[in-house]
Structure formats: C-alpha cells, structure tokens
Image (cartoon, rainbow, N blue to C red):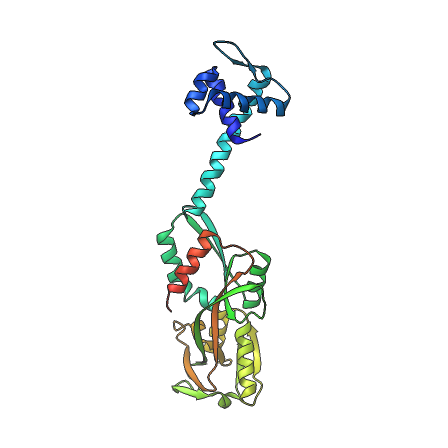
Length: 290
C-alpha cells in the first residue's frame, strides 16, 4: 500500500466518479483505475460500488477512508518535521564540554547560534574530557569539546585552540607579585588539584621539573579550587581558561619554564552523520575566538 494510492483512493471517494477524480489528479482515468484495482487486490476486498455515473464506497471502503485520511495527515506532518529540522527551524543539538570551555568559549558561540536559529534547543552537559568522549562514543551526545588527544580512533577531531597553564595563588602568597615563575620553585607547595586531564598535564609537567606535587585536595569543581586557593590552603595549576578573575582572593602567575600547554578540540563520532544543527553549531564554534 503506497501513499500515492491512498491519495488516489481518497480523491475518488470525494468525487464519487473515476473520471472527475482522474482529472483533479492530472492522470489518465485508466491509470487511476489500475491503482485502485491494485489496492483492492492487496486488501482482498472491493472498495467501491461502481456505477456508470457514480461510484460509492463499500463498507470496507468507508473503513479505509477513515484510516487513509489519518495516514496522509501523519505522513505530511512527518515530512514537515523532517524539513523543519533540515532547514534548522526546529530541533536540538547535544553538546558535552569541559567546564573551563563552557564558561569561556561557549557563551559567544551559543549566543550567535541562538540568534541565527532560535527554534533549535541546546542541551549542554559538563564533564571531564574522558566522560565527554565516552558520551560521544555511545551516542548520548553529538558533539564534544575536550582536551585532545582522545587516544581513540572513533572520532573526527578539530583543534579549536591551544592554551597555556598558569599558577593560581592566594593574593598574600610569596609568589603573588611575580609575573612568571619556574615550575621547580613549587616543589614544596601544597596543591589544590583540578580533577581531569588538566591534572594529568600538571602532574606530568611537575615530574619533568623534578618533583611530584603534594596534593592536599582534589576536586572537579572550579569554584572549589578558587575558593580553597583564596583561603590560603594551597596553590593550583590550571589552564588559563579555567582561571576566574572575579575571585578577588586569587592571583594568576605565568609559568614559563617549562611552559605547560594543552589543545582544546571539537570531537564528533567518525561513523555518524552530523545533524544539520550540530554541523552549523560546529561551524559557528570554529569561528569564535576566546
């Protein structure tokens, strides 16, 4: 049973005449009659009481009419829904991101996207790079913004930016007035660790400088890191985007030897097609600058 056959059937039922129905459909009467016959053969019933001047529905035809109207309405609604998504009039895009990016790079990208496509909803999930990558791999979210590399072959990766790490200290700390420091000078410090791949990068750099950082507290919340540093409980090594200048009790100091850097990138499952909304958001995000 094809949709066009149902349209032919309904037009014939409305006109009660094969000739008039064929004219409205802009097809030959023979072609219309053939499609109605095929429909009747498939269903195993007669749909019309055929007369020379008028053809009326049988009981089976009347039953089909009620359902056919609903089917065609739903088919049209489905077509319009798909076209709306394709034309970026409606839809949703799911994005996973590390917190330092969600508060720095994403606000501008989301603002521009919402201005251009107000009918599309954005679902934002914050997590570590590992959890975001896992969610993209499983299809729970479509786009991820994480610290690269992923170490996986599942993703298309696009580098968005490269950023350096800084030292965050209390305003009364002995290093608070310095413009930059050597990493080795922190060997005796207590550290507030920001959980995730940023911590892995910081630990690796410290070990390369000849010491293992003494972590007194580890947290996944940037607010907690700043609060504890501001309270004088330790120092923190953070990506520059993760530093919150509004915390008056903290100061940022550059690290120049060795310089610690990371790459932030956009990931998408390599074997899944981009949705129109995701593709456009990625385009806007790549055009944004921090």
